[in-house]
Length: 276
Image (cartoon, rainbow, N blue to C red):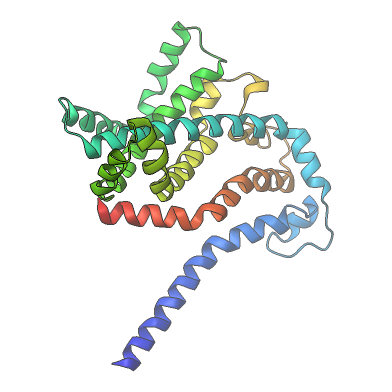
């Protein structure tokens, strides 16, 4: 029995290592390919660089105007994460704790929001924003990105909050906490794992989105990183090393955010799954 368990453990570890390698290798490949001269890269795409060219990053920033694009994406992502976290936790708390008229309708609406294909709304939203004269308006993207992320965030947060004992709420009421104090001092601190999870998911949705960004904010000084990357492939000559350097720069914030909050994200996802 022990031998069987040991063999099973070895096999599981081997599978886990194999899956990890398929995720880690592309990142390593991007890192060393981004500093290779383009002719050297074209000769052998997998070989380690013989010549290191850090100037690829400077060229990438100049060609794609990455500095402005990264700042724009950080702005949209940061605003969206803050709004989604505050409103999703607050809404989920009331849905998980209180019975009120229309509760089922609210649940139905945010569930429906997860089922509707997002890009089916692309043309209607463009027409609506054009009528409101909100093309090339940052508010249009902020509202759109909020709508993209809020439904799933409420769903995950409600499952998590439902698993928090109600005795904690009752104790805070006895201590004289108002509703706002209860949310700020009790619920939000207890929801750190699910806050990390929804923050990362919202950040990913906002950072990687292309279609709405390209039609709602086509102006150059408003474009996001996903639009900036398009300029590396739109010319007659494609310099792959500049493109890879740009991809490294635009991927780094997401990778760092996940590394910093990975434990909380995993805890939030597993807790939400078990309690849901």
